[in-house]
Length: 590
Image (cartoon, rainbow, N blue to C red; front, side, top):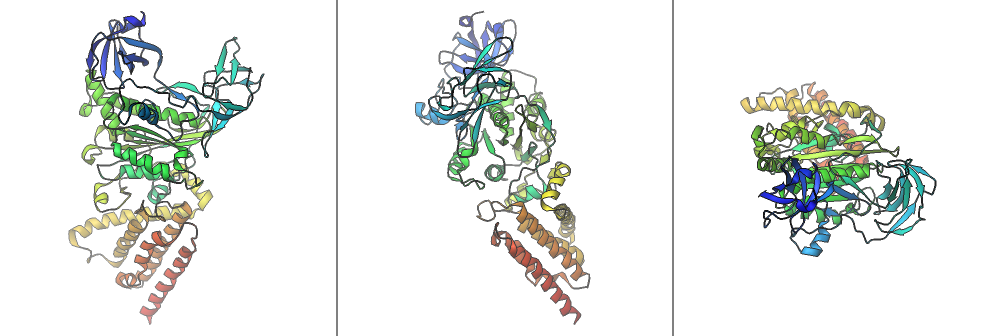
């Protein structure tokens, strides 16, 4: 049927039905009403089609026209994405603000990337070259940190003809033509379109053998996530999910960060944008925004666009992964995304499952998390997408469906604890309930770069924290005085580890980011204090005398006093521990 025959039959919030919609294809993008609101087909039968609209439907009425674009919901990929801020369907918010002011008006659209900007392009391909999907035929400097590689779309291959010379071009300028074996000619520009719900193909999925280094001690040491892996950060309101995500975005050693504010408060996204526009990248000294893409779908934006936002984000991440970059996606939060699924599912009158979420919640979560991975891309280089999703269970209940289903698809679980947050212990990651299944595969990397001692110190610290947890249960019942000295020592040394090592100040110049070399030295000093104190206690010297040396307090302060560049004070502190405790032994034996 012709597009003009498609008309709105009924409207239910963001969900509309389209009369004569049997000609529409599932997941195709449509324009709805006279204002041409953006929508996506989510259901088709012989009489009508169901469309979810990504904009406010207030003012729409039955019998308005619907226009089929005959293509799926897609995003335009090309130079100019980095440093930009988009809404959930990849519309650039800065450009839209110039058109409509502070609030987005309905039906307003703008291209994802600036189509008028000239880029200095180095053309790599020449006439007669054979190119396949993923081959790089041109490069341009997108920012001071990112060299943008212009690639053949994955579905195309052929012989180059009419290639232009290097120069200044716009994103829609034709760079070359590709003639396939069947004689079909495709004109390639600096950009390409890609459906957001379709994973970009790769050559092979590789084992994940390198950690995503974050500079956060509890993560890098106890609960690492691999590059190409998946992690979840669940926690109740106020437990520090957002600040943890910010820290990971600022300091992780990913080449590119895609930050998705999915249903979050607008002032938080404003804070991210302002902070990142001023913050210097620790590796290069350039602006953080030069390697960051922001997707903002705040809580007051249309709920259907929230559902699309994580697919938009993962598509952008895969695009840069295909260039050979390591990309980290920070989704804050997947609970708000799941709530959008639940609302739309209710309006579609689907049968609800647990707590009203749709029965397909697990499969949608799987679709998202399974797009992570460490890959050999089509060009032959290696790239990765690491997904870190925040989860906001109501009341901090980790047994609710989103958290439980997320645990099925992730291998690192950073459980934020309300009690720790209220005690001002940040990051409030509970070391008892958190876990990382990546440790066995990452151990060779730690051993190669930092020696076998790293694993020993990690195991010792984990053991002390577990022992302390058991002892504190006894202390709650009968008090600490009844504990023997060897157990009192465990409690005291675990406190040093908790306060001096696991607790980290995001706003302190020295403590906000800590390289693994310093983390290793800190662990070494703390374990040295414990093992030497064990020797002292073994000679029937009470723990109270060890505490009087001031060593426990001194170790707690090292995170604020020892710089990241000069670690020699930690070596001197290790000698000081030996000297003071040897003197204490000698004094008691005299």
